Length: 477
Image (cartoon, rainbow, N blue to C red):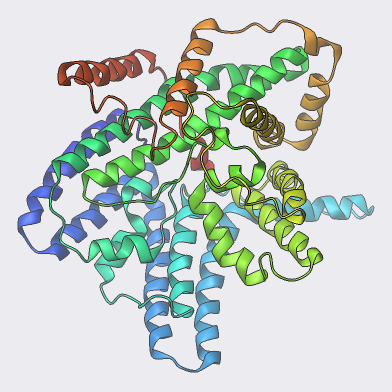
């Protein structure tokens, strides 16, 4: 079920109404309804995969209880291995089986020993990368004795399957989200209104910014061989805003929807395109995934401690695994490698934590130094996005070759209406960059009729811009 669909427009108010009516009863009934609604939401896409998310949840539920009871280090390691093998095994089979088979065949062809192995027609369960990491973080935290396991199976099932963030994050930690299912929730009108504002902004990002950009991006990338270099540059810039509007828009809708039900989810994006270097970008982009890799992979490997070689090794591993997490394609691995190569010089120079504040603090416009750094970081990010968007490495390198050609200096055919909308969007994001989302505080001090007219106008603009439903990009991951 898509957030930008008519189905969800019916689903949300129905679930919202029943949920708060159940507030008068016992908490387990309300939590059970969350599980039921979440399974309906997930099963709307393909009910056959409900068993997969249930199996993953039950394995981690019982493994965590076993970890609490066992004192033997060997027994605890065996239980941890069970959850790692089962969860990563399911993820690996559905997401990477054909990738490994195809590359295994290619390796034999390269050495002159052609073989043929049949691949499988595997459907990738939507959101499997997200809920797998969410359940794994719970079990690993219990193993590390940072978290007491829950005996409330309904609360745990609700934590894993909570529908606002189930299929594309944020990837929540049990320490933050799970305790919220133990507490009685009471309806808060200000919290709900704030949630609706964030949903509105998320829909604007998705429908007005991302979906409109997708039309131009698909046309340019599909015909990249015939496009001048100037249009190829425009294509990757539009893709940068497409993927940002699409993914951060989903996160905004998810966080806002959770707030309607009395839940708090972590911030997943913090205006990443205003970053002044690539290290700051990765502190602001897909925060829930970046911090997951930091806590469960980078730090256990040694993090920034040890020799420079160990720091380089750990950085390469973290970015390559991050690229591979995004998809079974060499383009994602190269995308991760490029970002590692951007990051390593900052790490070696101890400049990777230089920009911990917000760009242009206490200024209406950034200073020229900040502006230059922001533009350079954005250009570097766009270059890496070429590999992320390309169908394969050949297209990516051809695309780059097309950019660095004499046609780069041709005047591109720019869609004026969309360009104006994009500039207005950037302005609103800049204005609201100190908030959790751009619309959070805009209009709060305005005269009420003006404020309501602004929100209604924004909603009407979204409706007028909506056309054919576009799936969210990160559903494929």
